Length: 274
Ligand SMILES: C[S@@+](CC[C@H](N)C(=O)[O-])C[C@H]1O[C@@H](n2cnc3c(N)ncnc32)[C@H](O)[C@@H]1O
Image (tube, rainbow, N blue to C red; front, side, top):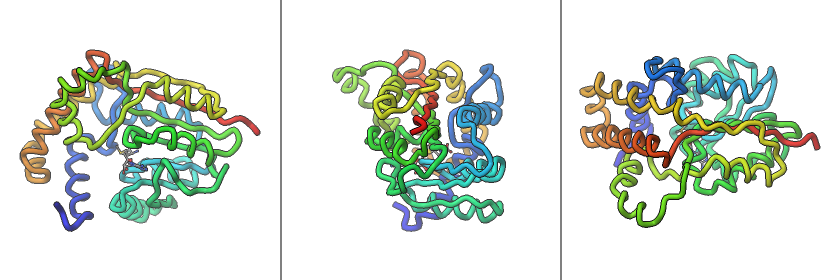
C-alpha cells in the first residue's frame, strides 16, 4: 500500500496515459482502425453536442477524474465548471492542472450521490464514465436533477448492462468478475433504460438514450496495442501483475461486449422549465 497517495496517483496517471491517451475513457470509433485519440475525442464531442454548453453556463462535472474535461469545458466554452470527485488526490491533481493551464475551473471532494450543493444551481450536469462507480444510482440521478436549474441538461455516458446476469452465471464467471474488479475497481452496471426510466420518474424529459456498444468495442484492442507498445514502462510503473490483470480485463470486457452482456450507452435529459 502506498503511503504517498499523490505519488501513487502520478504513477497510475502516467500508466493510464500510455494506455488510454490523454482522455481516460472509451472511444467512439467510426471504423475499427480509427486512432484511439480520435475515437476518445469523438465520444467527448458527442457529449458536448448533447450538452449544448454556452458561455457562462454553470457546469457540474461529476467524477471529474484528472480534471482535463472540466478544464476544457471552462477554457474552450467559457463555462463556469465545478469538478467533483471522491478522490482527494484527484482533486489535488485537477486543481494543479487548472492552475498550470491558467484555467478558471474549481475542484472539490464531494460524493455525486449526495453532493451537498444548492438546489437549481447548475445549467448542465456532466457525468462521463463515472456513474458505474456509484452503486447508489438513484442517489446520483436524484441529486443531479435536484441541482439542475429549470431547463438544465444532464448528459451522461457509461458502461451499461444489457441483460440480466443470473446468479448461477455470476457464480460460474466469478473469476472474470474478480479480474474486472482488480483492474477497474468496484463497478456496478445498469441498463440504459433504467437510467432513462429513473430520470423520467424524476420529471426529466429524456432527449436521447443511445446504445453505442458496437462503436466502442474497438477500444479494447486499442488499449492492448498500447500495452504492447509500452510493456516495459508500464511494468515499471504498475508492476507485472497489474499489467497482466489489465490486459486480461480487456479480454473479459470484450467478450461481454460481444455476447451482449455489457455495452456502452449515452444519454441526455432535460429538466422542465418550472
Ligand atoms: C473513470 S473516471 C472518469 C473521469 C473523467 N470523467 C474522464 O472521463 O476522464 C471516474 C471518476 O469518478 C470518480 N468517482 C467515483 N465514485 C464517485 C462518487 N461517488 N462521487 C463522485 N465521483 C466519484 C472517480 O474518483 C474518478 O474521478
